[in-house]
Length: 105
Image 1 (cartoon, helix red, strand yellow):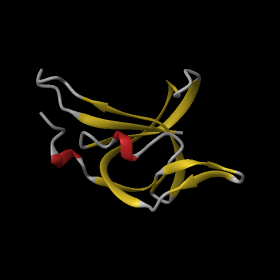
Image 2 (cartoon, one colour):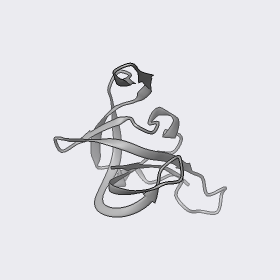
Image 3 (tube, helix red, strand yellow):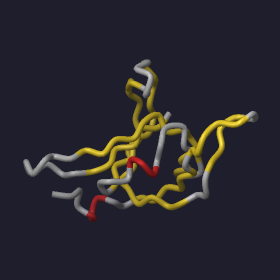
Image 4 (tube, helix red, strand yellow):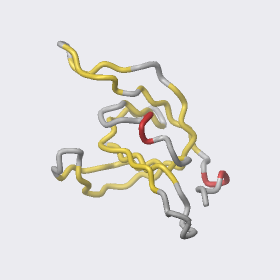
C-alpha cells in the first residue's frame, strides 16, 4: 500500500548533492518533490551514526530516496536546509503505507 496521494499536499524544491569539490558540495539541477512536510525538532542519526537535530521531515511517494541523497538542499516555505538522510520504507505487504522519508536539518 502506498502513502495516499491526498496526504501529499506540499511541494519542496530539491537540489540533489552530486559530490564534493574544492569549494564544497556540488549540486544537480533542482526538481520539485511533492510530499507532506512536517516541522518539529527531534534528534536523529546521520549517515555516520552521529546524533544531529532535525527540524523538518518530508514524507513522499515510495522509491525516491536515491533522488534525495544526504547533503542535498531542500527549500520549503522560503527556507533552505540540508538533508540529513533519506530512506525508503517498504511494509512488505503488511498494509502499512510505503513511502520515502527525508529528514532535514
